[in-house]
Image (tube, rainbow, N blue to C red; front, side):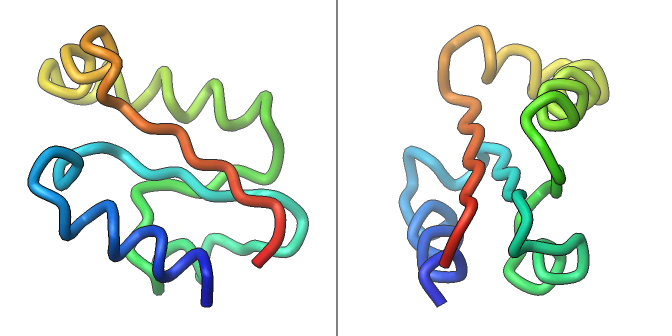
Length: 79
C-alpha cells in the first residue's frame, strides 16, 4: 500500500531513519499503524497533537528532533 511504502522509504533514508511517524484518519486503525511500522496512530488531528506532545516528552532526543524540525508528522487520510 502507499502508506506502507511511505513508512519504508522514510525508514530506509539515513537522514530520516529516526524520525517519528504518525498515521491516522478514518480509513486507518492502530493495528494497521503497528503492521506498517508507524510510531503512532491518531484518529484525528487533535489527538495527533497530543500524541506528538507525548512523544516529545517521552525521550529528550525526540524533543530535540522536533526542535530541529526533523520530527515528521504524517497523517494520511487515504491509501
